[in-house]
Image 1 (tube, rainbow, N blue to C red):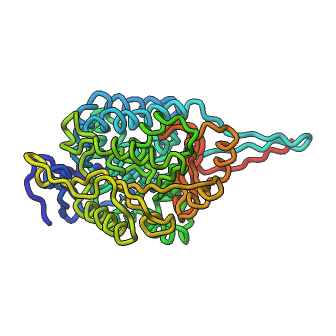
Image 2 (tube, protein in one colour):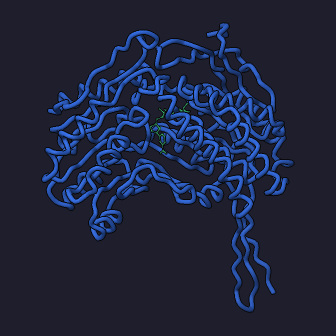
Length: 486
Ligand code: NAD
């Protein structure tokens, strides 16, 4: 549709300017908690991507020739700019996404700030390698920025995931075209306001808003975007890989998951129970790392089932702005319908709903919002569709197991391999299982604990190009081997 007047409509940020999309087309931006439209988003296309590429190419020579200290200082200024407006960012994140405001303020936005600070400092400490060949010469590795790179992110942790890409790309001297999810674009727009405020050189960071098929696909197809860092669903990742591979683009793909949470009877029960409530339902279960398949050793299965469902039933579903709300809205109407359809599928596959299972109708401000009860289902086979496909909402299944080999087979049975959580006080078993679990991340007696220096991401259909600390800096550079003979 053509642009309509709303308070909070946003624009693209290209070459340091706020620009209308080339075709002047806009998409509606919804607030999930109220189900209402509150702004418009540019429905950009290949022409907008093309002008962003021109800007980014133009900015590349001077940006890439800055010293690491100078780029560090720009990244620190961006971090300061977000920090100075943290309340505004958190409110925008909560309004766009439906997540509790408290979560946005204590997790998402602080982590986005940390991303800029971490990579600002990392680049000043980074070194490349040199290898001496005795009596022959020295080989050293030059690590050079790639040029114009693309960053595409999903809606669940909008600013956090986008900045996890933008910060290292800029730190290493690339210029960036970034596309936030069209479902949750507002914090990216606020980021462009920060860049404008601090006077970031024009064209260094460009934010193009719009849909995947138009903006994302144009970025993937653009010859001058030499590398793409993508986080999103596995089907989208597959499409991007199919388009980009024949163009020999460098790709990092962080994709979907179906994460197991394995609980042995010898675990620290209280710690496990409290963490499992969080790891199942934080952000309405819309964190790629949430554990959605809970396997419990049989001796404690009935106790766990009772205690877990009791705690889950106490989680207040409500207006994300209310401090008492533990569960906010799911991100969109289609997503709510998808999650509810999976609950129906689970029932048809023989599942018994032991907590939740229904849409929640609130009153007042949120009467038309998209809310679902936190839902626990038992009685399903590990191989059924509910236990194999990503639901990405507030729905978990629980099932008992008897022995280690059995639960390993259950856990590893999906095509996904993002993250696994394991609860046991048996050290040998913990190490043995960590090795055998086919996942990029294994948490033992914890969840979502992360040192930014470690590689992050999944195996199998959950992604390629795992990134962490040094690896992510490497991803955004081309390595060149120089050999000097004595
Ligand atoms: P999505 O794949 O639908 O969209 C992700 C991004 O890709 C959006 O910006 C979208 O506009 C864009 N896009 C869509 N089609 C495209 C195309 N053809 N070419 C280029 N870009 C395109 O995912 P989503 O629904 O926004 O997010 C949920 C998914 O993200 C879940 O599967 C979740 O597991 C995954 N995720 C993974 C991680 C991780 O680290 N592995 C983190 C968060 C979310």
